[in-house]
Length: 330
Image (tube, rainbow, N blue to C red; front, side, top):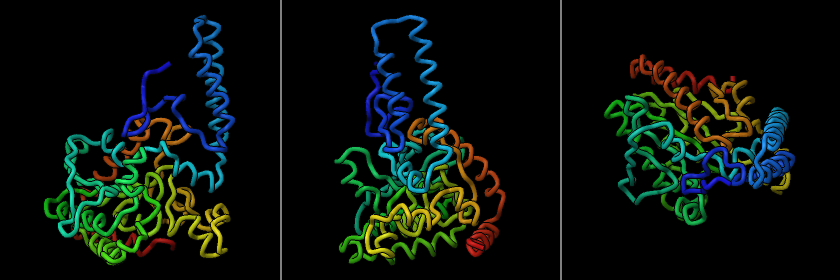
């Protein structure tokens, strides 16, 4: 049995015994349990190894079959998978020398938004992203990835800092939405989101947005106005959560799966209507199966698109960004 364990940064990829399976993945789980039992067997023989290889082949084939025809609601479940990589997981694997910056210089620091300077290969960049946390203590500290106004004001401060020093901005989106509490409204939640939209629309430096998990409501939009918007294959991006949409239309959250279908929250649907520019492939069975592989895919996309955007003048960037936003949905 492997001695790898769960850490605050997530599960190491490939640890079948640590993996959590969704309801529709039960057939995959059953085969995985058989593989684990054989791997933990005290017997060692070529026949045993052969059985393991055959089961692994069956598991991969079944995973490919199931994931080739996911429903919209199943995709939502994958996007919310508890072991899905978060912003800090990607920062660790895609960038070097990350130096986190804190605070909005008005109220305090919001841990649900992380940001700072790092290197993408040899290029210094500003990274901003939602962070949900892993264990219960960290999730509470990070407010389950739902930012307060000070989180968005911190993001705005870092964007303006990046513009001043000509640093490209890279944002990672993974939130159910902005925090809807009374205290957030008292401190100007709507104003903070709106001001971010205005600042990002005119920021004179390249902005690349990557939706990695849930892209929910204004909480996602507040850091997702950019020059290039990509989504991981099984991420979602929508004006509201399916449960919220269901509650508004049918007065019950029980029709969330129907709402998800109607909202077109999946990457392949959003690409067709020009909401996003690119779909980044995920490993077989989702990003949570292999952090390193999906991080490599994201890194490749970032390098390619930054190279293109870096050739444009700041004026051309802003004009191009405005034109892109005006063409959404057309």
